[in-house]
Length: 390
Image (cartoon, rainbow, N blue to C red; front, side):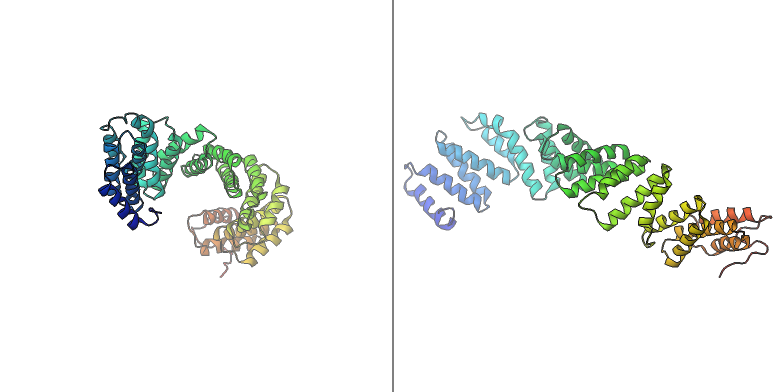
């Protein structure tokens, strides 16, 4: 009741201490008064009160309670060094440092971390790990320190700490450490290592969200390392996830198609490209639509390729590169059909009106136009007898 009504409790306990100084109730009253100050956030008063109990009633149970209160107050004040310095001076409490310094140092850092004070908690965790590299809370300290360092942009040291936590195995920070390590490794373009970490994460994940994140990481890392078989396997995991969205389904299907094309499985690739290329508003859709036309062209289906090219143009894609590639393919189709005049006109139109100068489209158009023109023309000039499109 006294702790619930601090003003009244303070008055009552102060009265006991003042008027009954020889009473057995004085030590517990002093502890309770210290707790009132502590709960009110007045740690300086709480420290003074607890120290009185320890110094004057050192052989009582209340002194042990006061030590606990003192420890908590100093921890809240972020001054555990003062706590240990003081306890060294108190007779009968020599075992305090050995039994408590590990946990107290860690808890002090954890309190700062929970409050969002990463700068201070990082200092404490560094000190803790320097003093207790194999301490009871070393794994916790490494994870929290890694998280703070990652947030502040110190990714190299954060990665080291995340991997140390992962190396311990079977701990509460395993999943989050894998997330952090995989993300950093991918960002550092160490894609093979990132794939391995994402693969481990896929087995360790406790949530559908993290499993999906791991599948995507595996797929994207395998794309970077140019391993089409792994791309297909990971894409299948993405497509089978309960967290699949339309956007992610488009991405996974597109990369499955590209992997199949790379492996020479053009029929499988064509099926998947068709699933994505029904629209050309997204970058995946635009490229997929072009590849549908390209694969039909390579298979000798000139009319099918021409239909896809015309569909693409009618759909008015916002992606200039793939529009350019489609027009180049259109010129190839025109040549195949014997309409060299139209092929030249298409290529010259690209040279004259394509607005992106450095993505290779204009250079490719010039090469093809030069191959169709008996005499090399000046850059950008229309060949003899070739019309340009307005």
